[in-house]
Image (cartoon, helix red, strand yellow):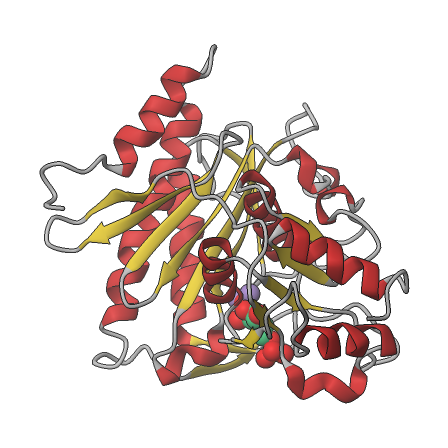
Length: 339
Ligand code: AHG
Ligand code: MN
Ligand code: MN
């Protein structure tokens, strides 16, 4: 399809705006700044091997993880572009312990944005797909200052969520509550063009995605589930294992092909038995997209989007993908099924 015929993401966002009564254009402006950030980060990622932006900064973030130069670049860019929209009340990032104060004199708005500026950082230097994840809420407080309660809202309160995947091509996938749309960046014109209208997760898949290196830290229930997946039965094929180690890439494949992605509870650190993925800027946005595409997202105990957050960087187990696969995984994890 040549660029002359595709729907640009800007037009798509404007169409969504005109379809929602009372829309003021603020949301459109905010989303367009995320699009701009995606284009700039994509350009940096695509030349990362050529300029001095690979490798580590030598610092550690609030997660205790090594901060890569591209993490830092992407984080700063997202903060700058989002506040520049004039429609943000306050921001929070995976890279910052606390919510990020707006620059002095910045025009503020009513939206709260939480984001993972660069997901899959450990893959950057190996040129493996990485991504950016964002979750948009409306602020709850009304005073001059936001507070943590504006951020600690359940995923059901999201007004939009999405991700950018910097892969063999750069894609932006988002939802504002009316289904999921995917756009592919045409670098020759610098536009995201609609390439995946109305993404629907297949009812059931044949791929399981998890880091099996942690097998010894998994519950017996989870191990039974994996034994079931690798057993052929009359009504079930043997599942293939695909794990990239970048949540955005693993989720994108699961959205398109179906199956199930898990970052489950484990006993790697008995004091933190809830897995690695962060609720507010990884699990909630991805859970929202899965549900908007007809799939599901569970913590194993309940719907991800219904978790009542208690901390900005809290982690939850995540099982997301085809509705039937997620339901089956939850039946095993809860002990309802053992084969
Ligand atoms: P981030 O790079 O933003 O810290 O996220 C990395 C996450 C996620 O992208 C991926 O699913 C997971 O880490 C992989 O973790 P393991 O290496 O433990 O499998
Ligand atoms: Mn991440
Ligand atoms: Mn990250």
